[in-house]
Amino acid sequence: MPPRVIDVPKTDPGAYNPGRMAGALLQAQALHAREALIKRLHELATLVKVDLKSLKTEADVSAYIHKATALLHTNHARPKNT
Image 1 (cartoon, rainbow, N blue to C red):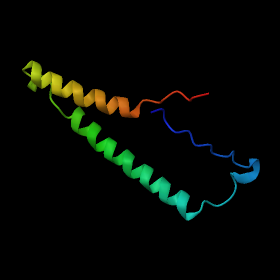
Image 2: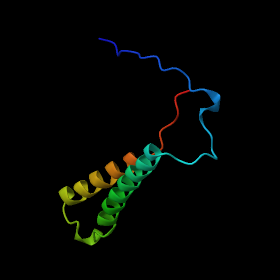
Image 3: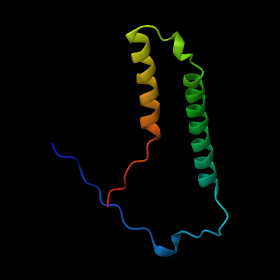
Image 4: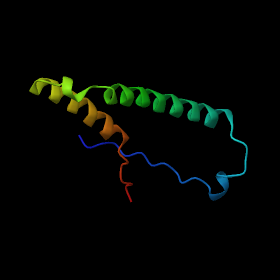
């Protein structure tokens, strides 16, 4: 079954006002974004602390690369669909 397409109306041109004070929703979104970044920072710090000389087997190296690649892919900028 093909994906269902939902039409979303365009935002009014005047809806965004860069000088307007941010509301509670935007402040909450910024907080959630920061928490997600902190989580990623902890994950990155954990991987960077690994002594690469301690990776002795192919399984050790494979697990390390798997974790590193997964972390890098989640932070990769996605191209915009135009």
